Image (cartoon, rainbow, N blue to C red; front, top):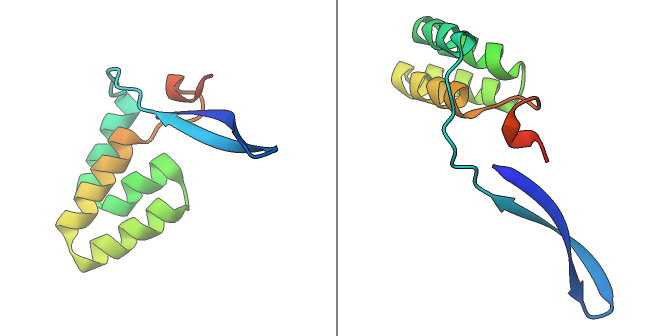
Length: 93
């Protein structure tokens, strides 16, 4: 997802808005992503931690894994496959 800042004229004020567009280009899986998915099969929060660190997704994944292994595993694979770092092309403007 690419975010672009813009302005909207409302009355006599300029109001900043955030326009988002989907980047539907192909994303390649790196060797690191493959290793994270292998770790996620064993312990789903470990794969999420290796991708995003101690953030909201990590704690959510721990909760999902406590509620059931399969929801935690699905969430972990989704985070690893969809989350990209700031150096990724989707964050370049």
